[in-house]
Length: 285
Image (cartoon, rainbow, N blue to C red; front, side):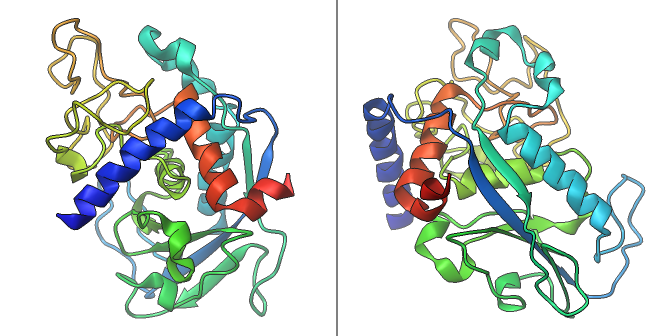
């Protein structure tokens, strides 16, 4: 209960701060180098009928595809914004954050920006198998046989200030890394707290950002990110049933199969997070 109250307070405070930071610089490009930590147990999955990756020790090509999506999404170079429903096209905004692979070899006989570690247990505590490297300067991305998640307010915990991804869907255009980096930069799900199912505050406070419409739960509460609703469909999880305003299911911070955009308010929020909590990255541009 205390954790929920703290998150609720953060949401309310964030919305107040966004209103006060309308003059925040959102145009200057912020450069953030990325380090991948691939933690593999040497196993190969036999479940691949649905197209998921089967080798835990992902090839560099898949890492670079995921990084390409991240870069394009945060620089508004993703051409699929053309598919955003008309209600939200005017809100599409570029975060102007340039993510790129760190130009540093981090282990003997390794590749630039990539650390590969063999460990039989790659289901939890991945940051203990390979230490987070200078989170004030780098985005650390851990990949293992785990769920995809980002700790709340990760900048408060340097030892695990990172993004964690399941190896199964990396490089397959699901925008996994884009979504999790949104959390790494202070964004919440559109429905706020409560997991994919939302909670009692989802339709009143939501994510605390004015231009993202409230929705009572994720488009796909189970987190599969396969479904893209059609306008007027029963899948739409909007809270606005009276005016029939659809949810922003094209938003990167939803769970859906057609994530395409950040809003102007989200861009202000994530850049405010960098300015306030990742000061070295802010100053580096």
